[in-house]
Length: 263
Image 1 (cartoon, one colour):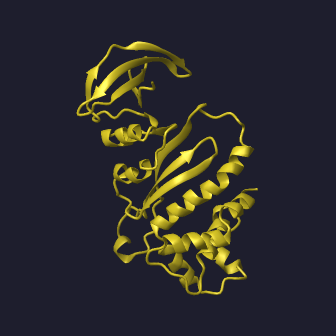
Image 2: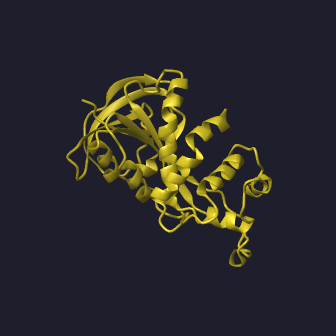
């Protein structure tokens, strides 16, 4: 089933069209990008133990292993994002029809933003062999739609130490009315929150201890309860901002979330 879904989301002809539209310095000579995607898909599904094994068993692969690995290593981050966004758009109607029909938050489209550091690689480069830590190959920021089970957007960074909050600007520019963005406190910075409000989106973000700075604060009021305890609500403003906000915390007063006032 998973293989059928991926073959629908990533047909060879469409993958090569995306490559032609979004490539910058890569080009096609003997190896189509769709062939690379197909070999990687076999590895991702667990049908092959590695890219090397997939290439060895591929009957239509006409290039050498070094050429294949070179194509993979030079894949551009912008191209990865185009594949994720395009394949999510192709699969969304299918996943919606196959879903439970019970959205997580009726009336809103949830978007979960999180970062993922790729696992450290082996010390194959000579300058790294004397170091104990494995080299970090990069990181990704992913936007996940829990109602469809799809990753709908992605930003990949080749620098493993890139600032996630800076990378998030690209993803949050795609915010739309009727969405609720869920993120950890690392993304709780005023420019990002204000950008979501300006786009007509809402958010539930764990409050950071240092930012954003709070301005006026209203009285705490009861706001019902949830599985983890009772909630209270407090109206606040942010320093340097004229936008009204509402901060919600657990009864224990441990910082829980920030969200814009819904009128």
